[in-house]
Amino acid sequence: MIPPGEVARLAHRARVSDKTIEADYVLTWTLLALANLSLRNTLAFKGGTALKKMYVPDYRFSEDLDFTVLEKISNADLLVEFEKLFVWLRREVNLTVAVRRLEIHVTGNPALYLNYIGPLQGNLESRFFKVDFTHNEQIVFPLSELPVKSPYSDCQQRLETLCVYSPEEILVEKLCALLGRTEPRDLYDIHYIFEHDLADIETVSYKIGDKMALKGLQQTALRDVLARKHHALERLWELRLRGQMPELPSLETVIRETERHLRRCGLI
Image 1 (cartoon, one colour):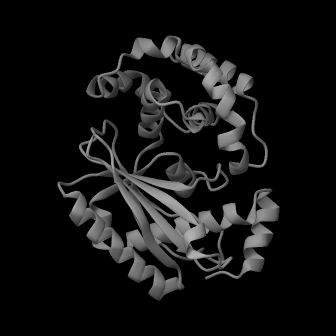
Image 2 (cartoon, rainbow, N blue to C red):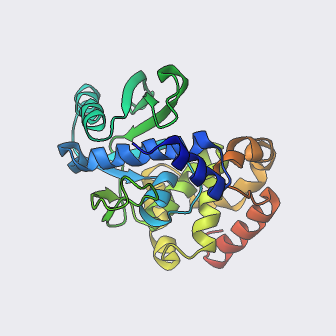
């Protein structure tokens, strides 16, 4: 485990809190633990955290992990297999991780909340992160096998890989999510992928209809979704995202540029 001094130095460099760096460190080692266990063959890493950990190391920070379950497995068996990570983490890096609670969504998808003791040596009950699992997800782009990226001195040389969504799949999922829930991170991630050309937009334009149809969504709903959700996004923008990056762009700029990208790609 890295010392608190390294956490402080990285926090100063990234202009975020020490706790944000500690959480990112624990997420990194959780991914490395998964890469060393048989459960790795059952899961595909996805979401905004996947962008940071597998594609863009200086991307926004996050406090959760998201996976699609690729094989048939019960939630009970999934939990049993995931708990094997705790033993590995304790043995390999002296990280303590324990189950805080398990929630089952009405869809049957589990969300696992985990307490931890990291480099800052806080109380076990004072730190936690969430791991979301999605069963029966339809994937429309090829998956990749990539190494976990890390700035931490005790894992920079590790070569473990994980199965991960492509940027195209992440973008399409985020666009679908934007039509449902109101999470500022979805809009932020969409905007970032567009602005930094992380995805093949022509392919996204061709396949997004398939993904939305599988989820019972209409692509035409993208036309006014940002206008409809503007007030809610405005209320949550700073609250949800401020601690995840040194400089948060204004919501108005992100909305304007995102709508421009969506029009250019023929998505609205």
